[in-house]
Image (cartoon, rainbow, N blue to C red):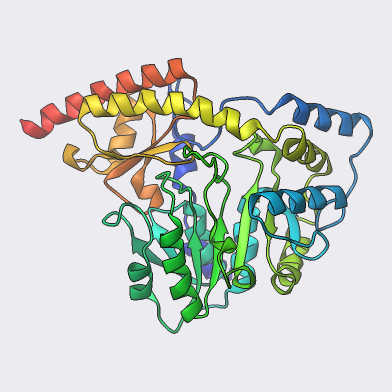
Length: 389
């Protein structure tokens, strides 16, 4: 039998899902793994979806997404990014922002092209790059406050470099780039005539006074070379509804559309109706989430401080990236030990191409987080005793 596609064979399954699946048959496990908010979808949004079903809105839509949703997204972009995107030509509604990652990379990359990714990195950036036939090139950010810097980017660029992927607020660290840092990156990107994919799915879950993080697409001369990924999964507790979107120039969108049309045809009609309500009637939901997450974050950071563990203080999203190097154990071994001996699941840093750390999601109830920190403290104390013996 002839061989399977070599790029697919090389790509790895998500380490996040791997560790989550490891716990499927276990009881009394506290799951702080998958980036999924425990809170329900906002009521107006749910009712819009229910009404869509009652109205038999269950057929195909336009491949690019419904006119109403694309107009709603364009209005959101006008307010959020202070930029105009033509709803007819510059927007595609996708099956979650994850589809957007695949669309963008398969549209932009030829075999052998290089894609620059800041490590630690969301696993799909790596696997999608490989499946597209391109080569992931990592920028280690552990020595630069978990931010991609202009100097670090410049250092890895070769004649084969085609794309830079940015994700701020970052998963798994929660870091955000300042405008000066974005401007420095933009200068390098423009000088080398590169494309940018900016994954902005967490940009409404931010703990600063403005309530949002600036995107590189808003900078001078960046719009035509940038693909924006966004959606309602994180901002509106809608991971299962599977609605994201991409914003880009008509020239890029027209090519991405071919991949989207071939892959999925359309995003779900019912979910598109719900997404309209999310962006309009429930537009204040992200602010509500931020208030809740600040309290949850405090529970985790206070406990980590008491344990003597260092971590990246998140400025956005709902994760904490914890340094476990002093425990003298790999992140995978630590994560498995937590599951087996302490009934607690977190994601090993190796899943994000950054061993020596673990990611804790605080998208869980405060009582659950309090108990989780008790279990983590017991594990850390036990490992410190072993390391010092």
